[in-house]
Length: 274
Image (cartoon, rainbow, N blue to C red; front, side, top):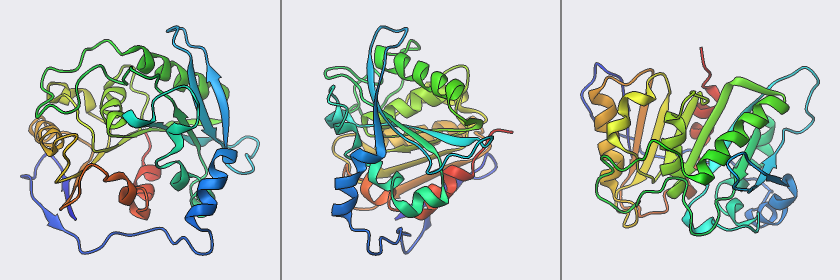
C-alpha cells in the first residue's frame, strides 16, 4: 500500500507502509454482522423539495444522551446499489460503521441514502480517464435531495454541525467530490474511495480535510481520476490536509480493505470545523 500525505509546501511523494490496520473482529463474525445490519439501520423515506423521494437508512448512536451532540456521516453508495428497496445501499461499509466496537468508540449518526435506478449522484461518466470539465455546477436530482436530507437531519437530530462528514465509494466517491464542494460547505471532512472528481473544482475544497483512496489496477474508475485530483489540489495549495492512498495490485474494490482500517475511522472522526 502506498500512501501520500500532502501539504502545500511539499512535492508529491510516496511513502510505503508495510501493513494495513484492521479492526479486531473477535467473536463477532462477518455473518452475524450482515444478518443484523438491517436491524441497526432504521428504514426512512425523505420527500425532498427536489421532488425526488429518497429512501434512506439511518444508524443512530447507542443510548443517545440528552444535551449531547454527535457526528453525522453521509455515505454515498456505488452504482450497483441503486434502486428503491432501501436495502442494497447497505451492502458495502454499513457493516463496518455498525460494528459494535466502532459504535462504542465513534458514536455517530450515519445515513445511507439510496440513489434511484438509472440516475447518478453526479450525472457524469465515471470511466473517463479525466474528469476535467465534467461536473455540472447544478446537482443531479438525487444529489439535491440528499443534500436537503443532510440539512434536515442536522436541524432535527442532536448533530454537531462542526462534525458532519461525507464519504462514498465508486459512483458515490464521485458524489462525495461533488457534495464536499457544494455551497454552503456542510462537511468537516471528505473520505473518498475509488471515485473521480473534476480537477477544475480544486479551489472549491479549501478548508476541507480530504483523504482519497484508490486501487492502482482499477478497471472501472481509472487511477488517473484520483491522481489528477491530487495533483490539482496540490497545485492550488490545498489546506488544511490532503491524504492519498494507492493500493498496489488492487482493482476496483478498494473499499473492503479501506473500511476495515481503524486509522481511516480515527482520521475521519477526528476532523472538525474550526
